[in-house]
Length: 294
Length: 295
View 1 (cartoon, one colour):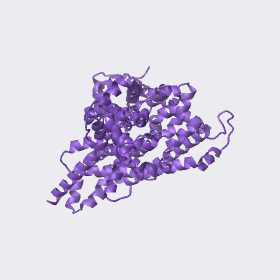
View 2: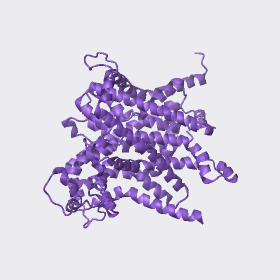
View 3: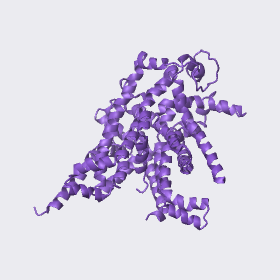
View 4: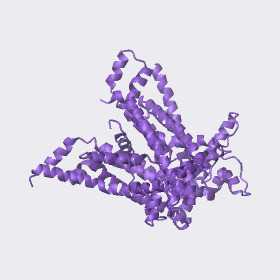
């Protein structure tokens, strides 16, 4: 052995750090990556026993499936509205709380608390609020408005968007609060000396510095938006109104039929969409956040 | 002066918003002290059309009621003593969530250490694959999970949910971001004192990441305490339904036994709410340090 002692130690340390990854890597391979390879394969064959290659047939069938299209549309619609709202509103809350308002820490606790409340525990209250003769309709009737059949009409989307925001705003707000406090004060002061207005400072300085956080919050909210099935399931069960029929409902039904081709094609298709969305977000961030990287 | 009146306005607005945020929690807790008669009088109309029963209620309106006419713990008594079903389901939730949280943290602690020490190209590629996997929703990952469970005969057992959950990469992503910011000088100093890698991991990295570990642990806990998707698919047989967690079962309670639903809801939120109140500062600190700011 011609290794000097320190080099030898370094090598052992490197090996140790590699070994640390192994348990996780083994689990990820066994439970996610390898079976996902099988999923991709299933999506290209006609049935799991015969395994004849059929090209894109399963995907074509999936695209023509009404239930899948409906589920895709509803899920996309929900995420397209709920995620940007979750970003903007939590940024708004963070900006207000940054102004040294009284009771800041109590407010922070209150906004964060829904994160730690199981949806199932409070679902009854949501049902009371959004019921036909429920609280929200009673209030809107006092103002002379027509009652809305929240949970069994297209307006149901509003109800689940409210539940989503309730749960997720606090977490996002915490991230924005810390990002806001990390913006270098001297830059803001210089801008002020040069006569920059509040709006200018916000758009040209704060937003730039916030852009990595905005991206992170956006991605987190997007991940969480696909869990909205929980709320919908607990509120309305397996067979909700048309507009509340989510992708997870479709997957559950397809699992029940044990239709592996359809399931696999849907999973692969959806994973591709997620990858495209991520790529777009990364490109956007690298364009917007460029100036700040120091 | 203008700024001051704006602050007052904003404070007022924030208090209003905070009250709105608290409504679901407060109503659930307050109503859990009502008699079941009072509950069905006020909320029973909700299920009138559902079961098509002929029962008549005081009003056909559903009245959100904050203060009980008569404060009683009878709901709790029935939940805790008369009807063991709920406690069994609660215990089911514990038996799923606790092992997932502990083992996922352990796997994540090791893996994040591996990723943050001695970076290499291969590690970078694996980490990137983890990020891709992390953004995949259940609609994607449950299909491979189902195939593995079926292949190894785990379907309709707890392991079908627990095993894949232990290896969920989300916690690794967050924790690695925190660990990468630990200054190299700390490690160099420890090495001079003769610490080996395992000691560096346990004596330096773990304590420095304490808040992040607590925060991630809480996030894992609540995510699985709240689980709905996985049991519906991985534990769907009639025998396995008896092992499903309370989070799935609560939706059915609401229609069957509305007089108890609030108390069960409170019992179910107590563990996570207590953890939250006790660890709030660590949670906030951990969220911030894993949040990608300066990351």
